[in-house]
Length: 88
Image (tube, rainbow, N blue to C red; front, side, top):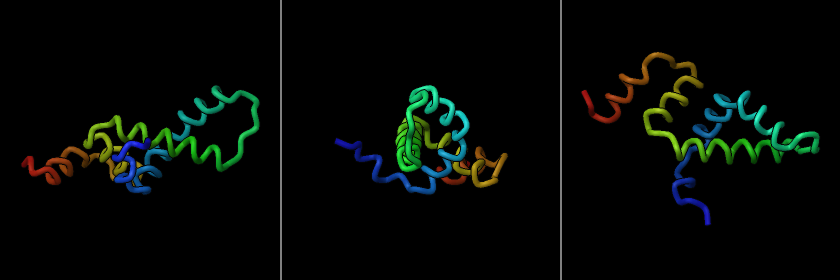
């Protein structure tokens, strides 16, 4: 059965993780499959599953960091996290 937390993950966060880790995961996928042919849909599903697991294992602050950096906001994670969590 799927983890209930998975259904609360916005696709924009999954996309940010895929973009952030794409190079690393592409190498990992190729080392796993070798010369076996794989469709674009299979690659997309593999990446989405990898992103979901990574998101579930990361702290909220790390999730924010990946999301903001992928969207071009660099250097403000600490301050944004403090503001969002009321830790002023």
